Length: 82
Image (cartoon, rainbow, N blue to C red):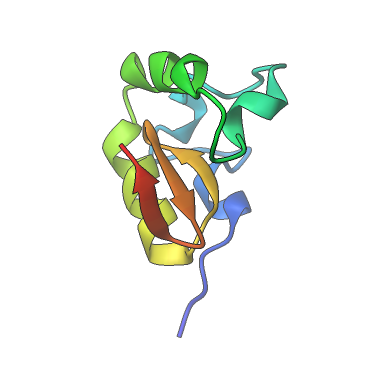
């Protein structure tokens, strides 16, 4: 069984287009891991223009991620905000 990790999502050598992620290099780190009561519109806006949004969303679901992935907020792989 292969376990996916974040390095699989954004590898340095990219054959799946991950280098095109709209959030890659974004300095606003807090926006990607908002507290549930915070507005996460900034992250959703960045995700809205991202060409790999569906892949990012699927990665979060499959690997139990928390934070904003693919324009949705997750808590341990469960979507808590769209």
